[in-house]
Image 1 (cartoon, rainbow, N blue to C red):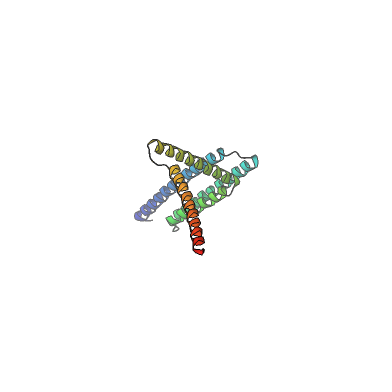
Image 2 (image 1 turned 90 degrees about the vertical axis):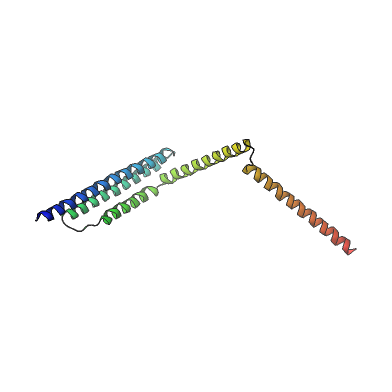
Length: 180
């Protein structure tokens, strides 16, 4: 093997090792973030034992998906080191498929649904509290609030209804006078 060929091979192997290391690091970071998010969601939701077991098992299956991806990555790096033409997009595709499959494992559980329900409920509570603070602040500053506008709109609708009643009565009176 010539020095140029050997240098090129070592250079390619070094780039592949760096790409593999970056991919593994990104995978571990993604798993950690995913696990933190999952744990926060599960902690905030009171789960029965069966649902908690289902949730832990689904995370275990998701972890297996990630480990299978790591094995696939290792195999492809080995193939590349042995001279096979391996594109970097294969590595990306392995991780994307794995992430998709792992998330499916967890998202299909009742624990995930319960945690999402809790999160939506908390967000709605926060929105309601924010609206109340906004209304109070606007009111204290002398500005019209949504409540004020809604009240005025209700009164306007009632006035229009009454006006229509008066117009209908006048029309009946006029019709009656014309008939005489």
